[in-house]
Amino acid sequence: MPGADSRDDWPARYLGELATQRQLSPHTVAAYRRDLEELARLAGHADWSRLSHHDIRRFAAKLHASGQSARSIARKLSGWRGFYEWLSRQIALAANPVDGVRAPRRPKTLPKALSVDDAVQLMEANRHGHPEPAELCDRAMFELLYSSGLRVSELTGLDMVYTEGGNGVPASLGWLDAQAGEVVVTGKGGKMRRVPVGGPARDALQAWLAVRPAARDGSAALFLSARGVRITPRVVQARLKAHALRAGTLVHVHPHVLRHSFASHVLQSSGDLRAVQELLGHASITSTQVYTALDFQHLAAVYDKAHPRAKSK
Image 1: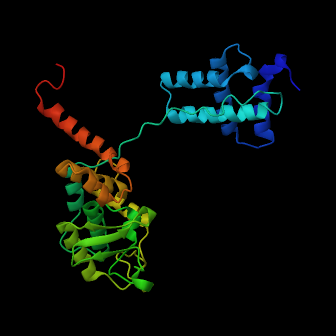
Image 2: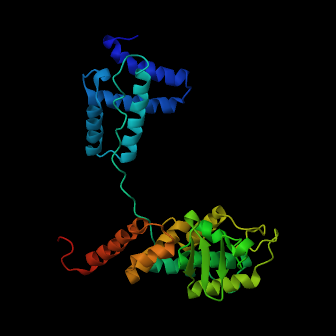
Image 3: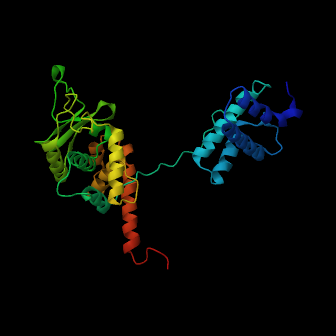
């Protein structure tokens, strides 16, 4: 059992066990070493076995004040906690001082949304007189994602028609109601909702349905892959990324960007947060309130450009 006079050996012994007994990679062990070196710097000459919960909280606050990210601090706390769990097996500790210490909350990142002009340009790009069926399929998918704010899983789960199971329960997770100009989808938590489909999306869907081949698996899937089966979210993501690159879009575009753009643009035009909540299928208004920040960003950009004294000279 090491005594207080050998406390400087504790990190070396711990790191040695990580490398030999747990067989962690040299890269991982080096990361743990840096975290313990930072703990040693913060602790100074204090005996590590006597550090308290309050000390660790103070160290975390110092790291936060120095500009370290919440993610980085959380990783360090995890490394320190593991060290003290090991140390408690070497000597008697009153408690693990890192237990219960949490990193600062990570700032909620705002969803990326295209401007209205960029979204329209993306939808209109790469059109020519005689598109192949695959191009018509892509156009219909992208228009529908932006028109109705669907999750990509909701898009790929759509059928061409409503199919009924037992006791009048829908057999499919979602379907296109072309006559009503709506899609019916089942979102998170099994919550069903109806979402309108805009004019350009309806036109694109009609063009796709006119050439859609029969599915090889006999399903009623609205959108098919090149193999003639229901398309997957990964394929939609890859096709949208390629389409955006050909269109010259400067930001990385994936299906959720179109969903965010839909929500932001509807909110900018209507100011109706509750309506956006229902259209997106959010169970809580809290999930939708992030778009009010997006809306403020738009207003702030307009202000900066338009107000004669918005910026200092």
